[in-house]
Length: 450
Picture 1 (cartoon, rainbow, N blue to C red):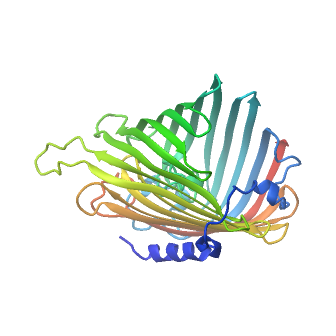
Picture 2 (picture 1 turned 30 degrees about the vertical axis):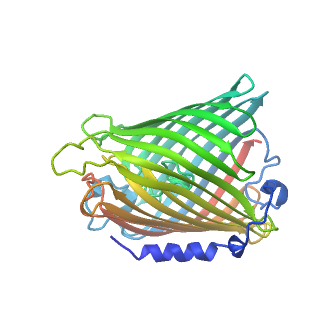
């Protein structure tokens, strides 16, 4: 497994960490929202009313690109997007229509987010069009003075398999900002993804609450023998606010992952959430904030009584930490760490994953903005042998606004991973990959409802 990526991300994390993070905790109250403290806004993409409860945005881009020969000599070449079969240049275009609605009716709230779009590529006198779409709806409904029901439903159509190599800093089983990125999702496996969550919470007063949750995720691959995947879980949690910044968490959760065809063994995870959530601003300036949470999990195998197996359930400590620092009127630096057990499509066992994210971005002028993001993760399967992987992704982008709705952009991307020899991997997926690329083009974002 490659080890050179760890020092790179560690150096980036330290470089972005502000000096105030090491100062004494002397803040008292949470700072006001950034929209109030930092009203500066760039030119590109701004609407007349950023707080409108409803929006409909049409976006499109045209660009030229150059990539390394990421697939040369690798197995599973038939699953690659055709534009990646050679090193060199190609051209691309994207278009998307996104709609969002957020509405409050008394104490109840409702929200809808949806989007449809397509990406097109031209390479070696060949053309390829890749459609995608998603819709999600959520609701929060009060039942009396102390009870609330939370509902959320998501449906998405995607054209690519997702390795889920980079855990979300917030602890979700997704790639965060990298999910849906064509520079990361490289393997052609059309699928429909469903997600459902239901929750109920009861407040005992201003300091304590009890909640029940259930979630279900389902992935159905449409044109492939690759097995679909299902995971679901339920939990009960009690929260007790100790101070203005610290909350005690007591809870239990049960999660199970399995293949849709039933040919793979179910895997069970018991989450024992006995820990602390802490969130606070640092220093007098109120520009630096830190938050962290702790937890634990027990991984249970269904083959405990088989000869030659370890008869003990495995206990793992989990947690999250995030540091955010505001630089001037527009710049923000962030660093985050996440450690958790993640179920992934196509794998029998969950991965114990450590992930680091570092990012910095802001406006150089009102027309020019810059952003840099780096991610690194190290994961292992709970079995004997060389059963892990390391991965890294990084991107840097600059945009220059020609007008309020049109901008030029340049982007550099880097993406690599390597799975150990003992990790069971579908034959259509390469065990390692190393990709670098540059994209230069023009993009437009037009609000139709604002």
